[in-house]
Amino acid sequence: MESAYMSSNGEGGVNGGEKQVVAVANKRAMRLPDLVLRVLALALTLAAAVLLGVNKQSTVVPIALVPTLPPMNVEVTAKWDYLSAFVYFVVANAIACAYAAISLLLTMANRAGRRGLGMIITIFDLVMVALLFSGVGAAFAVGLIGFQGNSHVQWKKVCNVFDKFCDQAAAAVGISFIGSILFFLMVLLATLSLHKKH
Image (cartoon, rainbow, N blue to C red; front, side):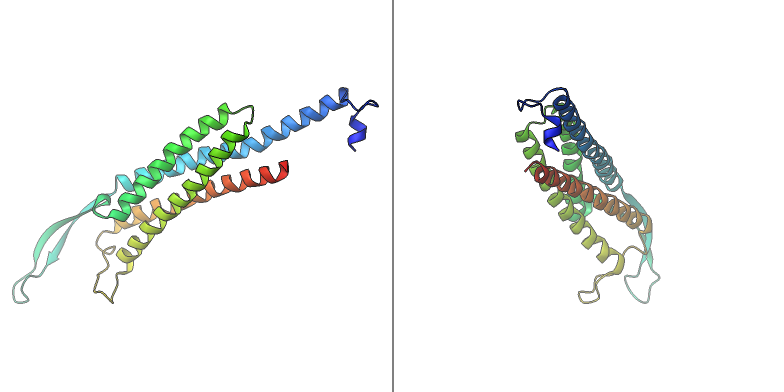
């Protein structure tokens, strides 16, 4: 097939120019999914960080100090920064969001397709995958204890009291999980692109 594009002396003629145009079009087509994934990852990690970062609920809980006296009503508050796993989750999503914005700009500026910059972006994409998965795992573990409790250590469930807080935290964890999958797909696309080059 390649001989059909080459002239008799082995140099690319008009058809060789067409072959180069096809290669450039394929590079652009390969970059479009990457750009879309970066924009979506930026939006999702921002949404997850904000959704949990503004999460707060106050409610009145009856507490019985002495069994013979009536319970006292005490106002209690649940905030995201009361749990270190949620703090880690919000910070991890904020870092991933900032990185997604920077890498989006670098990817759009890298029109020449420099390999070094592409490799650095791919390595940091992989770091974001690890960071987001660890944040999702930490927040999910704490959220599960809040939802179910733990009878072995006598931890009571709290999501029956702080239902709005738990629902918002669960939504943030789900959104962040989708964002981490998008970063993983970016690494996968970069790996496939590298494999096609060789």
